[in-house]
Figure: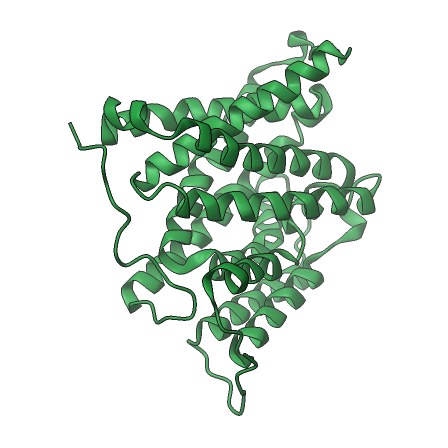
Length: 321
């Protein structure tokens, strides 16, 4: 049985310091994979949102993801790691992720899947701000230029014509999701140094599930009707599996691995390419039209990531801090 005490790898990224090339490349590729599987779950959610209240869907989705991750954690690290983990802290950190997931569902219900996919272009700003405040990251012209390019790509990717009935309200919920999810993701990596990455992910996902079950239970007690099981068929079950196991459990694990390798700031830049991945999946799966603007926006986001990371150097940029 693997020992419970597992210190964080000494190569965890420190914002502003150079990351080894192989770790840098793998971190970005893993983050891209995380965004792809996350985007794949959003079209599936369109079959589930009409038949379930958002809090019940969120609780079901996160609980299923936790039930998938917990056995993997047990197999990887053993029962002792699970028993000795700081469950109180895990529940508190997981609650941030759980409420963020609920806000995302509310945002998608109001503003549509593309609006939800953006998770707003502000996520890199929030993530970099956390690193500046807590980790001492230095703001450079190269970094600011990369953030600007990524944000520009995110804004261009917004397609309000494909939104829901209330795009503004959906964007507001997504912004709340950004704040909570960014903080929760960062704490998942930093607040549990004795746990493996799968342990950190499974612990906080279980905490998120508990928080969402409390929210859904409270709303049921206040009179929210229970979802009608008669509306469920094979399509809905498959959609739930895609939305929960692929779009959350696998996505979250890949996301935490990428943060551990390249940091929350660099990882967050990739989120602005999510609308492009959603568009590709909807194009291939649901025969939606191809959007060249979103394709170009994704290229702009990719350029922003390369510039912010220093892979593409911009001349005559001076450090701002």
